[in-house]
Each structure stands twice: as structure tokens, then as C-alpha cells.
Image (cartoon, rainbow, N blue to C red; front, side, top):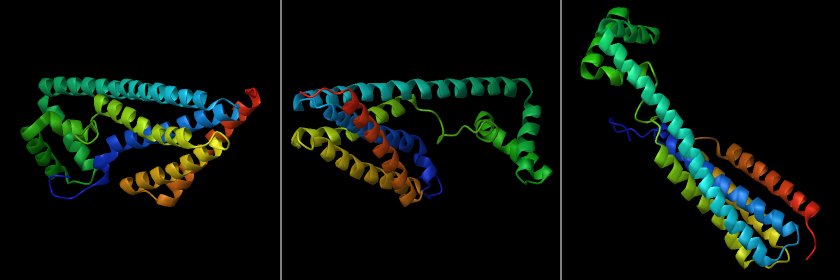
Length: 230
């Protein structure tokens, strides 16, 4: 929710990306792992152990990867802000002209652009340059811990579906049950993600289902190729 009372989907872009990525990755990778192990004619217990191990490893990998990636973005933002603060302290008038030039490029009249730049910088000079020169705002600011926790939790939530199905489904036909439930789950996730982000639902559903089905088909083929009947 913005200060003027209007809701914008861009406000959700940070957590939404991590949540959708985590849930989809958890569902696809764990379902693929379970299907691949099942195709190798493994025992029911071995399939469940492999699935749980995949959930734990995947959740930690997602959390670590997101944290490192977003931390790097955060470090870059902090370095840019520090450099901008030095430039503001060194030549304030030049920074006013620079900000005014940005506004002129966006269609504001030169005299008005200069006045706006002066007023903006009187209020919050660094904030004005962060937004309009560097493209850094409250919405886009990197949040490493939020991204890491969101990815780990949503990965685990996505991975839980194929694990539950694998636990209750009979060994005979287990791979079919897991694959079918995973595709349904992917379709639901694709629809929810598209709806939350304002994207076309049909295109999103087809995309995630296609790649999920391809991943499971490949791992099933590998499991069958290298598996040994029990």
C-alpha cells in the first residue's frame, strides 16, 4: 500500500519472486527426485528417505543462494549510496543540476525541473538521488534475510506435497501419483503467482506445468536407465 492509498503489485515484487521461485523449485525438484528414485525400483522407505533429504538440502541451498545473491545486491546499493553521499558533500550545486537534468529528460520544463530538484534535495538529498538517479527505493531495496527465509520456507512447503503423496501412495504406481499431484500443484502455484503479480494466468500455468513435466520425465528416464530391480 502506497502513501496515497493505492495498491500496486510492484510492492510485492521482492517477496513474491522469492516465494514463487521457492515453492516451484521445492515441488519440481522433490517430485522429480521421488519419481526418479521410484523409477529405479527402490523400496518405499528408500524413496521417502531420498525425498526428505532432498527437501532439507534444497531448502538450505535455496536459503543460502538467495542470501548470498541478495546480499551482493545490497552491498552494491550501499556502495552506490556512499559514493553519492560523497558527491553531494563535495559539490551540491552540481548534484542539483544533475537531478534537474533527469527531470528535464522526463519532460519537465528546465526552470521547473531546477526548482523541483532544489526542493527535493532540501527535503532529502540522498533519498532523491537514490530514487531518481540510482533507481533505489523502499520497494526495490535488497533484503537478504527476508529473501533467504522466504525461499527456505516456500521451498519446504512446495516439497511437502510430493512427500505426503509418496508416503500414502502404494509403491505400485507411486511415481504416477506423485507426478500427477505435482503437476496439479504446479498449475495452482502458477495461477496464484500470476494472479498476485497481475500476469496472464493461462500462460503462467502452461509454462510451469510444461517445465515441471519435462523435469520429472527426464529424472524418471535416468532412474529407469540406471536403476536395478529390487
